[in-house]
Amino acid sequence: MPFLPYGRQHIDDEDARAVEEALRSDYLTTGPRVAQFESAVAGIAGAQYGVAVSNGTAALHCAMHALDIGPGDEVIVPPMTFAATANCVLYQGGRPVFADVCEDTLLLDVTNVRKRITSRTRAIIVVDYAGQPADYADLGALAHDHGLTLVADACHSLGGSYRGRPVGSLADMTVFSFHPVKPITSGEGGMIVTDEASLAERMRRFRNHGIDTDFRQRESSGSWEYAVVELGYNYRLTDIQCALGLSQLRKLDSFRQKREVLARYYLDLLLVRAPAVRPLFLHDDRVHGWHLFMVRIDYSGLGTDRATVFKALRARGIGVNVHYAPVHLHPLYRERLGTSEGTCPVAEAAYKELLTLPLHVGMEMRDVERVVDTLGDITCNCRRE
Ligand SMILES: *Cc1c(COP(=O)(O)O)cnc(C)c1O
Image 1 (tube, rainbow, N blue to C red):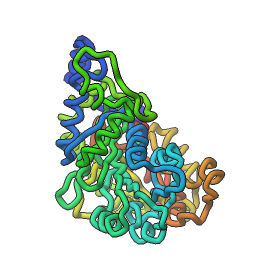
Image 2 (image 1 turned 30 degrees about the vertical axis):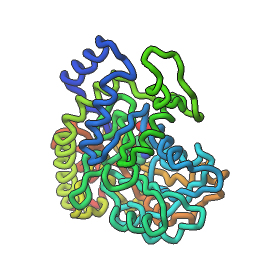
Image 3 (image 1 turned 180 degrees about the vertical axis):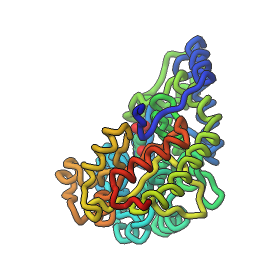
């Protein structure tokens, strides 16, 4: 049996041709494909501006910089995410404050967020965990009431929507990643979309060494002058990557639909063949991006543990994973912020039960059957013949 990874890119001949065209064009970077990719993603996400950067982590850094997050500032983040969601606050010298997640969805719990707001709070970064859009109506109202900026880490949910509004139009700034396992890929890549021209401008400068392009634009063409007006980085995305991203973006809908079909088949099969394996709750007012297919298993209740199940599945070619160890329990956070067990009890309890099952566009229905049957075999106590 071939190994089935938990996530994988899906590249076709059209993608390859688009990349080759870019390679043979006049611009390998800072050319026309960057702006094309930016406006295409912004269009799908229902936002005015897109700022393409080298990866999703750089996008989060740009967002925190554009908000002038700095020492003394607090930014509320969920623990059930990739570390970059919180690391970006530390890059700026700010303090990530962890708010717990909801038991059923593992999305940020608005009630818990409210409790963590202080006079130092500047922003909330919300994560569309596994691809399901978060509770944007409540989060938006809370942010508005306290004068906070709402940033969406939508690295899982490109193509999703909430009450009919696309992911990308639900927060002040929304961050995407185009890493190979994400909804679409550009190899590495990231983007921030926003309706705020001043934020977009600030982020464009930050990704290019802090060089003031307005100054350059004011100069007569052919001038060698440019001004570094603040400290920035080289976070640019190449035209080669944007060519791939543009080509992939045309397939976003069909990719998302295919993953949804696979996910719904998982849900149906698990119910009858492995009832002890519990999927996450799905709200019916949102379109799920289906980046990850997460389940919870009460391992100790079944007389086993996750390591045993994990190894047994891997040994049978099923590339399971775990997303995520709560960020506040990483040594960096324990040491820097003094976080520990008990900081976010719901996320900590969920983590002990989590398992990520394979879900990607290249899978067939029989792959889903294979995963569920293998899982049923291994956790045989929960198998109902
Ligand atoms: C992947 C991911 C990131 C980081 O994106 P990169 O492109 O890998 O830097 C940030 N947040 C979340 C939730 C992610 O899944």
